[in-house]
Image 1: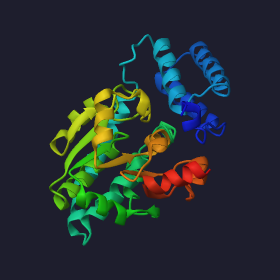
Image 2 (image 1 turned 120 degrees about the vertical axis):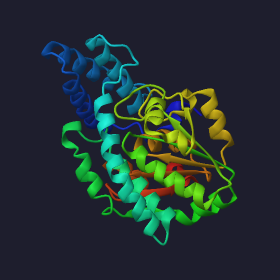
Image 3 (image 1 turned 180 degrees about the vertical axis):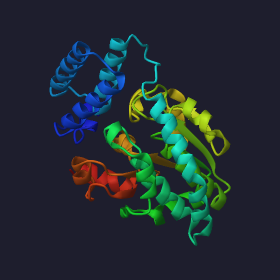
Length: 309
């Protein structure tokens, strides 16, 4: 099956306005001159037109435009344009971590409570919101408000009960602090499970890299690897060999965030669970849920719905 066939439901013009918003936000963050900005926007328009003729995911486009911006800045591909924002997100999240730990400990269903916190923390996404328009602290204070529109918790428990290995595919900085709380509860309830967490290979928007994992102490709760992904998502054919090995061998896979959802959707099976907040109308329609809702979706159900469409 070709890339185009695999992702036929994801190639939509609806993504273009969001991509343009993201590019404009990144241009502001990079403090480009008027001339530089004009060149980047011209390149963006050309790539968007190109995507209508051949298979390019939003993740491909964001990577190419980010590299164009970095070139305008005179920076290499390893430069982390969002480094300061990522560090602030982690710092603010850490301030709330102790409070959420107490909430989890007081809960009659601690694993489910930690799962809810991890899912709600997925709002810390500068790919879905303009960085100036996202108040991380305000969002964290409201974590208890959203509810799940799709909640395959029974299936998750059944899989974890029989599992010996779990692959946890991480998404953004800030939310990875709450992912650690969730993983701790998984290991507490199912101590037989070995957990491996995967991170981006190169900085892209505010997605967490292996360096961010080390700086936040993530390796204390799980073995940490790079997925090999340079995109705000995980395109399996373009990931690293070691990640593909873990992906193929894991008894359970938890995929965090919409970028991973979009890119791993064609790989969905009963081992794979998507945990995220649905952040756009297209993915809400594709998933059959309300925009802004939290979802825990088992891959076997999602796969049927995806291919049915």
